Length: 173
Image 1 (cartoon, helix red, strand yellow):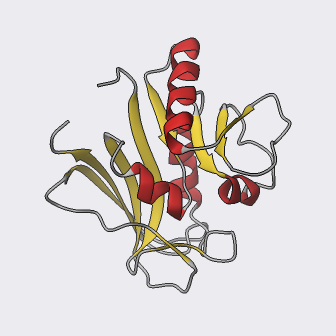
Image 2: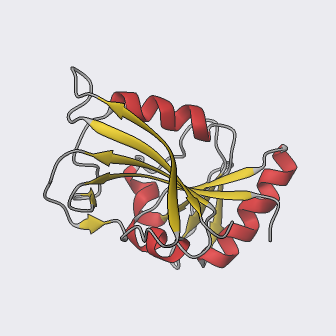
């Protein structure tokens, strides 16, 4: 077992949708601020399409490990991996080098599905809406995951829908 905690971060609609046409189908300013505070300074793992949804440049203050079988991305804060296994190894090394004890998995759908077997924790923003989309989050199995904290956030001027932020811990962790 690694000394580096692996955490999934995702915003998920009631119907499981996390994305549409390479973007999120909502605006959640409160959630983005929390996400930034929880991930800045820590290595993040993303798939190529998710990285491209950031405008093709890394999120500020985070080293990125991008999983892609295609072309490399030339940026000092981007490291390329060919598989999730390789990405986790690279991100753990980066975390140790930076004095961090956590890496973050940011998607997309295929990466989340693969990472569910490897991560220790999930920080999920449950979006209280059913939305159209083309990318879904895997089901959260209650025999594997237990909710350890929750926070309700109402919709507002900068938050399209009400949300419930839930931290899940792996039961066998």
